[in-house]
Length: 113
Image (cartoon, rainbow, N blue to C red; front, top):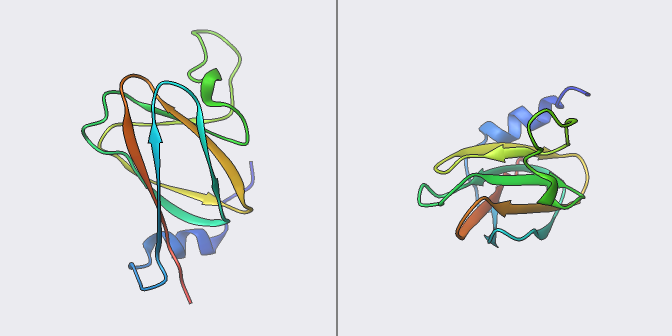
């Protein structure tokens, strides 16, 4: 796996500015997706989320989490109340779902000069 570019770390620590953008995605237990531009994002899962949020880039989130002992599957989990940083080298379609209930996840894209 390639290392994250230095600019990703710079962007993730940059303050919010007038060029910072915000997207939201309403989640249920079914896979849903959002097209995101390249960049560095803070992904905010509200503490009121009823369960973990499962995320994959370019493929359905239905394969997450893999069953115990199964082969690894690309993707990751975000916990309720978390703020995570993701970096996208290219525009991508991000797929996500929540383990139970519904929630709205926020995507804050940092902009640096």
